[in-house]
Image 1 (cartoon, rainbow, N blue to C red):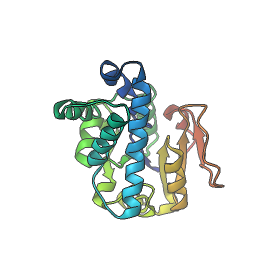
Image 2: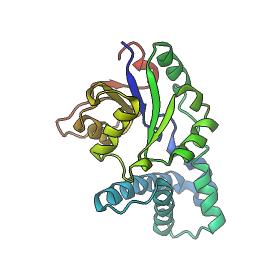
Image 3: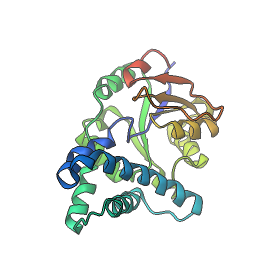
Image 4: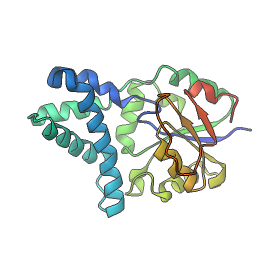
Length: 221
């Protein structure tokens, strides 16, 4: 039976740690650590803003997280350099399995959308440049609600946008906390465990499916 699927973008469809390449000239051998800290703070800031009810969109969180990483590394980044790095966040490439996986899932009749913390306009640019947008029917952004994952309301909003009951809506994400958020809100969820060393949070809430890539979802939903 065809399902309704919402795909997380960053870490699931495209690799945010690809920013290492753009940071290496500026940071040197510490580029991977800088990139990881930037990503960690980016997510942390969305959580904190959500809890505080002090919403600012994902672009603001991204810039502030970059500023934190730069301060932590003792780097001075010009305004142009800062905006250039943020712009590169819209040029991330898809993981090797993504295009084929989405095409095969679409051939099974599934309804598929992107579901992101990012602003819809920015997410559309990213997905179009990555060659992914045409494989999806829509881009659903939490920006419409003024809060972030894992607020339960954003997952219910995904179900409404897909016009399905919450319990018949799927989240597909590489982020364990995202999967737990979706399951807690009543959705079904597939965890894309891209790194075999990644540990799933032991909260007693499990994914309905665990796969290594999107192609492994084919025939399992």
